[in-house]
Image (cartoon, rainbow, N blue to C red; front, side, top):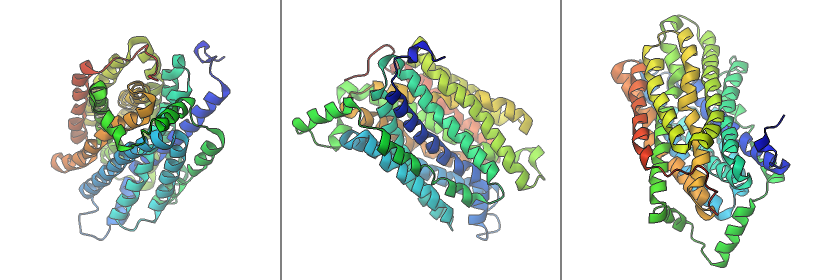
Amino acid sequence: MMPTSFRSVTRYQWMVLLVAWLGWVFDAMDATIYAIVLHPALEELLAGRTATVADAEGISWYGGIIFSVFLVGWALGGVVFGILADRFGRTRTLIATILIYAGFTGLAALAQEWWQLATFRFLTALGIGGEWAAGAAIVAEVWPEETRAKAAGILQSAWAVGFFLAAILNLLLKGYGWRWLFLAGVAPALVAFLVRWWVKEPDRWTRAHSEELAQRHDGILSRLGELFQPLFLRSTLVGSTLAFVAVFGLWGTTNWTPTLIHSFPDMQGLPKSEIAPLVSYAIMCLNVGALFGYLSFGPLADRWGRRPIFGLMCLGSVLMLPITFLYVESYRHLLLCLPILGFFNNGIFSGFPIYLPELYPTRIRATGAGFCFNAGRVLASAGPFLTGSLVATFGQVGSAASAVGLIYLVGLLVLPFAPETKGRPLPP
């Protein structure tokens, strides 16, 4: 039976959520594919350079560079396409960004050098970042006020499903090589056709856009400037900092889980064909917890407020990261810790499609949400690179990831300055 709070939701509103959800599923799948294939892809692409470049430290170094390039592209795409979504519409932007990230994920299968893989990952990330901004805005504007936070939680759950899908594809294609995983990333292009057929521009955006044209407010860059006017400055700084903490923490830590698994004593001596499915199972365990975190954030935030639940997720992350990465020494124990870690450091991301659209009016909603969620990503792009460097310094992934995880303390320090939006209607 459908919960009472969802009975006012129309079939069309569910359809909008479904299409945006599918877009995010494939966002997550594309983002996860590289973490899964990092070892085999770079072993092949770096082979023959020097005697040591394809060893664990060399893979960590070049892998960190590619992770960082990916995050810079994600940030740029989120900001640019967020502005375009406010100017030209949510659905047009969704279509363009889905086609971009699907196409360049497929082209990554053709890479012959590590820098070519980095280039394709950068271009893929442009679409992934832009799709988030447009998807978050369209769901926030179409769904009813009383169910908006829960809808955002359902939307963010797509990331866990995308991680599962990437892990399942890794199991199905494990005998075909890493290039086939990237080729499978072309599939999301089908979602673009669903957007074209099923989804119209939200009435909120249509009205705001008509008023803007009537007043001849046609400047694109002026939208960015408005985020830093006194009325929105605190929201922009706090939102950007929280997103920076979440992204830095995630990409600098849990995305190194496959590399951590390769370092366990009980993995030594096993053929790569046996380790590959174990990596998939670990990612599934991480995302079981993440799925519960995504779906829990909305109801908890409606009950206790946005700020306390952001604080809960930051505190849980800063505690669980050293437990998982520094003190766990076997694959079996890792599987017990990953769901708890996933609840916190993945679950925090459900807060952003809830909270960020609540901070800005319709005319700059996608710009504001896209900027906050992605501007800090440029700085956060140093996370994987820093972790890769610390691996070379400490000699192990666990110590490096635990050190990077201290970033969540910054999130706890900034939360007292965050505006609380619980119970407030979406700004017109």
